[in-house]
Image 1 (tube, one colour):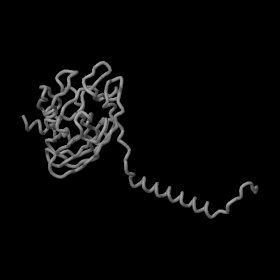
Image 2 (cartoon, rainbow, N blue to C red; image 1 turned 120 degrees about the vertical axis):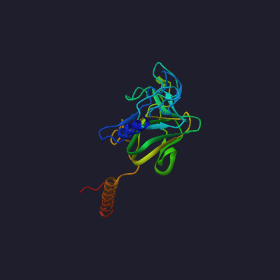
Image 3 (cartoon, helix red, strand yellow; image 1 turned 90 degrees about the horizontal axis):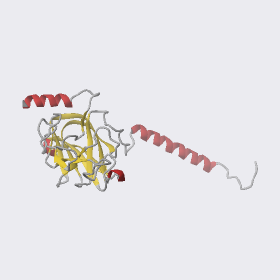
Image 4 (cartoon, rainbow, N blue to C red; image 1 turned 45 degrees about the vertical axis):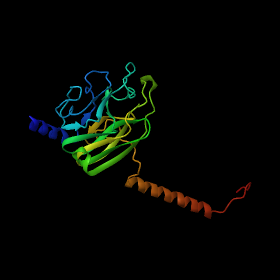
Length: 241
C-alpha cells in the first residue's frame, strides 16, 4: 500500500505545467472552529494529530507545523484571517509551534515552482529549500520575508490580509523549512507548479537584465540632456528673443 501511495504522490508532483498542487490546510482540524492541529501526515496518506486525512501528495510535516484556525466575521479562533480575500482557503493556514521552525518533506524529489501566500505582523520570517529531507543537504533557496500584514478589525485579526510570495523554481527539492516567530507568521495556499501561484507574483527587488538595460539607457538620456543644458548659452532674466 505504501508503494502505491508513493507512486501516486510522484505522479501528482510531476504533473504537467497546467496543473498545480495547492495545500490549503482546510480540514486538518477535526472541527471548525478549533485552535490548531499538527498537520503531520495529513497530505501523505496518513493522519493529522486531530485524526483527519486529506489528499495524499507524498508530503509530510514536522510536529512543529500546525494548522491554524482562521477568523471570519462571526468566528474568532486565532489572530489570523484572510480578510475574505482568499478564495482557495479561508479556514486553515500553516503556522509554527513553539520552536519557530517547521519542516515540509517531499517523499520524492520535487522539481518546479513554489508559490504561497503569507502574513507577517512584525519581524522577519523565511522559507528555505534543501535537497535532503528534514532540512538537510545542500541549500537550494533561501527567501527572507518581511512584515506585510496591516490587520483586519472586522475579522479581529492582526495577521491579515495575506500577500503573495514565491520561492522560485526548484530542482530536486526534498524539503522546505519555514521559520519565524511563533504566532507572528502564517502561510497558506502553498502552490506547487510553475505559473500557478494563486496570486500574482511579487515585484522583483532586483531588476532583470532587460530592466537594467532600460535603466542604463534612461540614465544615458538624462546625462545627455544635462550636458546639452550646461553647454547652451544662459539667457538673462527678462530678455526677449
